[in-house]
Image 1 (cartoon, rainbow, N blue to C red):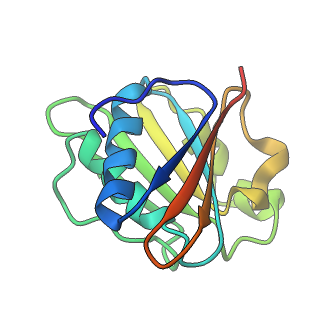
Image 2: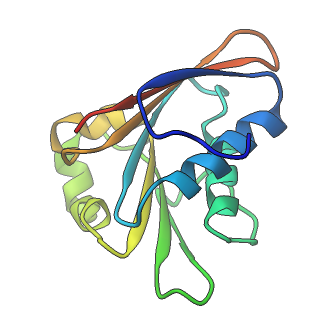
Length: 150
Protein backbone atom coordinates (compact mmCIF):
# COMPACT_ATOMS: atom_id res chain seq x y z
CA UNK A 1 0.00 0.00 0.00
CA UNK A 2 1.77 3.12 -1.23
CA UNK A 3 -0.84 5.84 -0.82
CA UNK A 4 -4.13 6.12 0.99
CA UNK A 5 -7.00 8.32 -0.08
CA UNK A 6 -8.34 9.96 3.04
CA UNK A 7 -12.03 9.04 2.98
CA UNK A 8 -14.37 6.66 4.76
CA UNK A 9 -13.60 3.23 3.33
CA UNK A 10 -12.93 -0.43 4.04
CA UNK A 11 -9.61 -2.19 3.43
CA UNK A 12 -8.63 -5.85 3.78
CA UNK A 13 -5.06 -6.71 4.79
CA UNK A 14 -3.72 -10.26 4.51
CA UNK A 15 -0.61 -10.10 6.71
CA UNK A 16 1.09 -8.17 9.51
CA UNK A 17 3.23 -6.52 6.84
CA UNK A 18 0.17 -5.28 4.96
CA UNK A 19 -1.39 -3.99 8.20
CA UNK A 20 1.83 -2.19 9.04
CA UNK A 21 1.95 -0.74 5.51
CA UNK A 22 -1.61 0.52 6.04
CA UNK A 23 -0.40 2.34 9.17
CA UNK A 24 2.47 3.89 7.22
CA UNK A 25 0.14 5.10 4.46
CA UNK A 26 -2.32 6.46 7.03
CA UNK A 27 0.35 8.53 8.77
CA UNK A 28 1.54 9.94 5.47
CA UNK A 29 -2.02 10.93 4.53
CA UNK A 30 -2.79 12.81 7.76
CA UNK A 31 -1.72 16.33 8.69
CA UNK A 32 0.06 17.13 11.93
CA UNK A 33 -2.46 17.65 14.74
CA UNK A 34 -4.53 14.62 13.71
CA UNK A 35 -6.09 12.30 16.27
CA UNK A 36 -6.63 8.65 15.31
CA UNK A 37 -8.84 6.36 17.43
CA UNK A 38 -8.18 2.65 16.82
CA UNK A 39 -10.93 0.21 17.81
CA UNK A 40 -10.43 -3.54 18.00
CA UNK A 41 -10.26 -6.51 20.33
CA UNK A 42 -7.10 -7.69 22.05
CA UNK A 43 -4.77 -9.01 19.38
CA UNK A 44 -6.64 -7.32 16.52
CA UNK A 45 -3.50 -5.58 15.29
CA UNK A 46 -3.73 -2.08 16.75
CA UNK A 47 -0.07 -2.01 17.76
CA UNK A 48 1.01 -3.39 14.37
CA UNK A 49 -0.76 -0.48 12.68
CA UNK A 50 0.75 1.93 15.24
CA UNK A 51 4.21 0.61 14.36
CA UNK A 52 3.55 1.33 10.69
CA UNK A 53 2.14 4.74 11.58
CA UNK A 54 5.38 5.61 13.37
CA UNK A 55 7.41 4.46 10.36
CA UNK A 56 5.27 6.69 8.14
CA UNK A 57 6.30 9.65 10.28
CA UNK A 58 9.99 8.76 9.97
CA UNK A 59 10.39 7.23 13.42
CA UNK A 60 12.94 4.41 13.37
CA UNK A 61 13.00 3.38 17.04
CA UNK A 62 11.09 0.31 18.23
CA UNK A 63 7.38 0.89 18.82
CA UNK A 64 5.49 -1.22 21.33
CA UNK A 65 2.13 -0.97 23.03
CA UNK A 66 2.19 1.46 25.96
CA UNK A 67 -0.21 -0.72 27.99
CA UNK A 68 1.60 -0.12 31.27
CA UNK A 69 2.98 3.35 30.65
CA UNK A 70 -0.30 4.51 29.02
CA UNK A 71 1.53 7.08 26.87
CA UNK A 72 4.60 6.68 24.72
CA UNK A 73 6.05 9.78 23.08
CA UNK A 74 8.28 9.59 20.01
CA UNK A 75 10.13 12.57 18.56
CA UNK A 76 9.95 12.92 14.81
CA UNK A 77 13.48 13.50 13.53
CA UNK A 78 14.42 17.04 12.50
CA UNK A 79 10.89 18.41 12.79
CA UNK A 80 10.14 19.62 16.32
CA UNK A 81 7.01 17.46 16.11
CA UNK A 82 6.11 14.23 17.86
CA UNK A 83 3.91 11.16 17.81
CA UNK A 84 1.89 10.23 20.90
CA UNK A 85 0.81 6.60 21.18
CA UNK A 86 -1.72 6.07 23.98
CA UNK A 87 -3.12 2.77 25.22
CA UNK A 88 -6.20 3.52 27.34
CA UNK A 89 -7.01 -0.10 28.19
CA UNK A 90 -6.33 0.45 31.90
CA UNK A 91 -8.15 3.79 32.09
CA UNK A 92 -11.65 3.60 33.56
CA UNK A 93 -13.22 6.73 32.09
CA UNK A 94 -12.74 10.28 30.82
CA UNK A 95 -12.15 11.63 34.31
CA UNK A 96 -9.22 9.31 34.93
CA UNK A 97 -7.80 10.23 31.51
CA UNK A 98 -8.19 13.94 32.18
CA UNK A 99 -6.34 13.34 35.46
CA UNK A 100 -3.16 12.45 33.56
CA UNK A 101 -3.62 15.20 30.97
CA UNK A 102 -5.08 13.34 27.98
CA UNK A 103 -6.61 16.61 26.78
CA UNK A 104 -3.12 17.99 26.13
CA UNK A 105 -2.29 15.05 23.85
CA UNK A 106 -5.61 15.38 22.00
CA UNK A 107 -5.11 19.08 21.27
CA UNK A 108 -1.38 19.31 20.46
CA UNK A 109 -1.09 20.94 17.00
CA UNK A 110 2.54 19.77 16.72
CA UNK A 111 1.79 16.07 17.12
CA UNK A 112 -0.02 13.09 15.70
CA UNK A 113 -1.96 11.26 18.42
CA UNK A 114 -2.97 7.62 18.06
CA UNK A 115 -5.26 6.02 20.67
CA UNK A 116 -5.82 2.36 21.43
CA UNK A 117 -9.05 1.64 23.35
CA UNK A 118 -10.56 5.09 22.63
CA UNK A 119 -13.96 3.91 23.88
CA UNK A 120 -12.72 4.81 27.37
CA UNK A 121 -12.75 8.51 26.47
CA UNK A 122 -15.35 8.60 23.68
CA UNK A 123 -17.14 11.66 25.07
CA UNK A 124 -14.03 13.85 24.96
CA UNK A 125 -12.58 12.89 21.59
CA UNK A 126 -12.14 16.03 19.50
CA UNK A 127 -14.19 16.73 16.37
CA UNK A 128 -12.40 15.43 13.31
CA UNK A 129 -11.04 12.33 15.05
CA UNK A 130 -10.30 9.59 12.50
CA UNK A 131 -11.78 6.25 13.63
CA UNK A 132 -10.16 2.98 12.55
CA UNK A 133 -12.10 -0.25 13.23
CA UNK A 134 -10.04 -3.44 13.02
CA UNK A 135 -11.73 -6.81 12.77
CA UNK A 136 -9.71 -10.03 12.58
CA UNK A 137 -11.16 -12.33 9.91
CA UNK A 138 -8.60 -15.08 10.55
CA UNK A 139 -5.06 -15.36 11.95
CA UNK A 140 -3.60 -13.06 9.30
CA UNK A 141 -6.47 -11.23 7.59
CA UNK A 142 -7.91 -7.99 8.94
CA UNK A 143 -10.88 -5.94 7.82
CA UNK A 144 -10.05 -2.31 8.49
CA UNK A 145 -12.77 0.33 8.31
CA UNK A 146 -11.85 3.99 8.21
CA UNK A 147 -14.47 6.45 9.41
CA UNK A 148 -13.85 10.12 8.74
CA UNK A 149 -16.05 12.52 10.71
CA UNK A 150 -15.68 16.12 9.63
